[in-house]
Every structure is written in C-alpha cells, then in structure tokens.
Length: 411
Image (tube, rainbow, N blue to C red; front, side, top):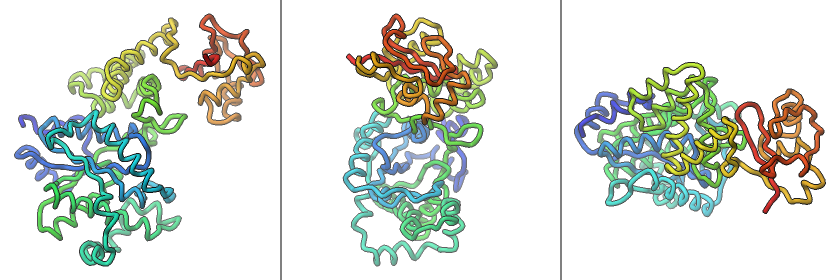
C-alpha cells in the first residue's frame, strides 16, 4: 500500500469528520482494514447520493482494504430519522428483501466480492430475531438518553414528535457495527455526514463493550450551492438503474450542473488524476462546458459502461450541434389516433415530465420557455397533431436551454 488511501480521500474532497484522525490515518497505512458502509433498502435502486459512498468504497478496495456492504434488511423496517422531518413509511419484509437483492446486484458492478475481497451482509440476520430484554441488558445499558437527545439526527423530528419506534434507530445501527466487529473484525464505519451521530454511537459501543479500538469517518454530502441534496431531478431521484433513469438523462444531469460544482464533482465522482481535476475545474465561461462534458462522460462511464457513455455524449452533442440523433433522447409515444385528434401542449409537457403540473406547464409556456421543433410557442392552449411533425416524424420539445423530450407515434 504505497499511497495512503486517507490522503487520497482527503485530497479528492471526501472527508468531512473523523473520530480519531491520526489513528485512522496510521491504521490505513499499516494494515488491511475491514470497514463497512450501510445501505438501507428503501428503494429498488441506488441513487446518485449513494454513488459518492460507492466511489469511496472503490478507492478503499483499490488500496487493499476490505469493504463490507451492509444491506439494511432490519433497519429499513424502522427507518432512519436523520435529516427527515416526517417518519418514513413502513415497508413489507418482501419489498425490503427485493430492494436489498437489487442493491447487491448493482454494488457488484463496482465492488469485487470474489474470494473474500469484500463482504455483503444483511442486518436482518441479527436484528429480526433479537430478544428484547436481552438486547436492553446487553446494549441499551450503554446508551444515555440525555446524550442521544442532543444528537443532530433527532433534532428535526423533536419538533413534530419523535416516536420511540425511530428513537431505537441509533441503537440498532450501533449494534450493527458491534456485530460486524465481532463477526468480521470490522474496525471502521464510513458514511455520509448525516450519519455522524449514528456512527459515534457504534464507535462508543464497541469501545465500551469490547474494550477494543473502533473508528468512524464521514463524507461530505453532495449538495447544490443552495445546500439542496444533489441528485434530485424533475422526475425525482437520479437513479443508477438505467430502467429508472436512462444513461442519456443521467449524462445530461451532470452535463448541466452548476459551474461552481464542477471541480468538486470531478474530484469525488471520477477517477481522473487531481492535476486534471484542478485544470478542468479552473476553466471559465464557455470553456467550463467542456469540463462538464468530461464530468458527465466519466461518471456515466463508471455507472453505465463506456458504450452507453459514448452514446449519451454523442446524443447530447448532436442536440446542441443541431444534427439530432433521436434514439437516445427521452421519448413519449402516443397512438396515431391521439395525434390525429390533436394533443394540447400542456399535456405534452406534463406527460414528458418537462413540467411538474399543468399550472407549471402553463407558466413555462407563457414565459417563453418552450420551443417545439425549434419554434418558440407561447400559446398555452396550442394543439399539436401529425401535421406538426418534423422530418423525423416526431415533435421535439425543448424546455429552457437544456431539457429535451421527443414525442412520437407508437410503433
């Protein structure tokens, strides 16, 4: 292990907080460390938010350390209150198991699980059959309610009312760390900075109960310059599953991020050398678009493979350059009869997810933000039919400068 992975993560912008900075740095330079990151199985795909932690896992594994991807089959049944003003909806065991299986499949594309190089674990294995009284005696005794109530993760929930149900979450996650320490000699927990309180709980539990060293480290959260979590689109989350977010839409998201975020995302979400990251991040005005294209291409290549990344890049270039390749553009189809009868522009925008509601669509049209086949349209009641099709037998609707959608007759 020549270069300490701690220095790599630090230089690339990952590290937000550590429990014992110097000790962690030394540990990572001296030995093969088993570490874990938890993934609560609240959906059937990982998101762009998870991708940052997956990148960190890849850096750690490349440096010779052993990742544990802990699927939250048990904790998902409670729901993490961190950063949430409302209680999570309760999911069935079957849904949670299905989601966990999907996560494993996706993670296997980034992490090498062969020959014990990484471990996949599921906390349902030890949480679902716990004896409550024994758990309180063994684990609950080590937690101070006063201290727990000061934790950042509970503050937002205190105003609306924090249920005892959710209050258990920190103890359960701490117990996960203890179990992984006992089962696999896992000594380090990594996670997003919103997990800091939960990670501290686990580190403290192992040190008290086992009298052994344990450490925690958090990563910065991907946010816009306004502090909103990055990875939200008009359709909702930016998914890593190509069926839920197409490679083209995924590419376009990163191609269109704010100028001020380009260098940060290049450091965190690509493997480009840091000299190149800084060079691209320093580009200004029109040239920054080149850096954004590199960013979008590199991230899409890691997530969807080189072929899809090239296709997405060519589709984006042809749109901006005017030689449109339609096969990679998000498309909505209607029956021939619907188009013959005519479809109003507001319906087209809402169906294509270019607007969140009919009133949002109307406002965008009136404000001059919509073009149909390169013609600006400001009449919100305009009807389109087959006679309005372009040479590709379609309508290409553009919202603003960057959002495109194609409308065709179903084959």
